[in-house]
Length: 289
Image (cartoon, rainbow, N blue to C red; front, top):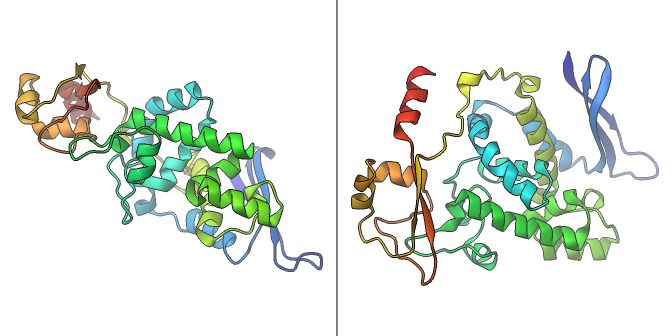
């Protein structure tokens, strides 16, 4: 039997603001994983409550997607030397929606702003937006995360910087004289952010802990494309291009959300990889699942 246990120590005479919280995953009477940190009861407990007691069907809409996303994301993180657990940043940022757009204009699984995406090598034009390209946006995220790790030397602080910014976290470390984000007094959003990551990890690794019994047929597996076409010249009519490969424009866009128009204006000297979805395999899966 596996369950989650909490251990909370209320503020004491040495620190009348901060509390301590311990979260343990227990199986057959033994602790198999645990987290411990000082927290601000005015913000951090509320963040945990949001994820651990407020999880409902709306908050796990991205759950079926992880079966298809993890096999694509995990090798990219490993190749870049980024801890696998940082994939849960995507759950917090975009709810694992490849086409997510925030009210501030951040886009994609990793929610890059336009200028930040360009800074980390992503092409963002009226016809191409690589913030929606899973491989390229993940590589860009890895560049950011490794840059932050070179600065902080602590992966949880790196995760906090994905929300609060490298410069923002750096300033707070210097002013408060604490090296790790878990020991900093941060703005509410960033403070909540770190605990949401921990909660997301728990939920996706074992949804049953939160009362969600997901069967294999509930998950959306990764179905590799039938073909990947490399192009280095502009395409004036993507609908016609799609027809040549036996698919519709809608199917082409679904498989390549980084294509943002009915045409592709190629950058000079650049080669693009366009995925041609395996429509037969997709239909068979959704017909017999």
